[in-house]
Amino acid sequence: EVELNMHKEEIKEMRVELSMHKKVLNLVKHDAARFQKGFTELVDLSNQTMDELPQRLRMAEIELPFFNAPEGIRSLMG
Image (cartoon, rainbow, N blue to C red):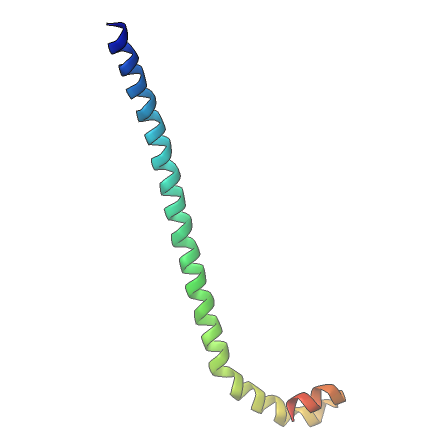
């Protein structure tokens, strides 16, 4: 009888621990999904920036003479 009660108590403790692990796992899954979404958005932004970069550089080259940019900037652009 005493041994049976010990096993019942162990099972109860294991269930509590399993429940805690499930909660932690759900939090980790939620964080992973959030990070994945954030990284996907960052990749999209990076790709968009790379796609637009040549056009923006051309625009900057056209406008550069009007702003009297420092020599370092002019040499970088030209």
